[in-house]
Image (cartoon, rainbow, N blue to C red; front, top):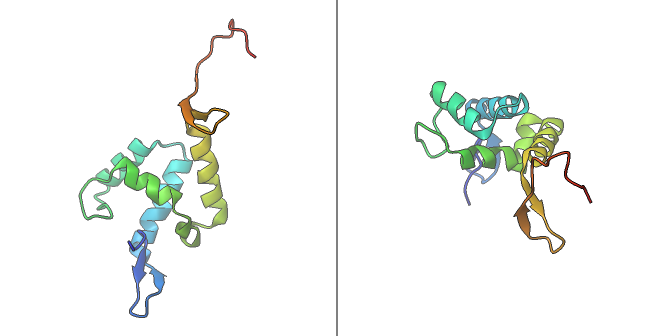
Length: 117
């Protein structure tokens, strides 16, 4: 099991909040809710010299997305902020699902002259 970013594992096997990493988690949530894309969050973390969970100088978009999606971070950012990010992520998503539940790209920009069904 991987220990989620923002937490430390105690000697008795419980998770406790790592305040240094928790501050980064809060920063990621705040920046994303302010309208930054995953790429902009990555750039911000790199500019602030905040190391990734694997210790690299630059975060990946997938790592930022994982931090935003991990429900364990509710204890760090609060339920309201976590729920706002989940709503924002789904609103920004350009993947639509067909009747069978399979993902497909939706048409994002439809001409107003097109007949809408």
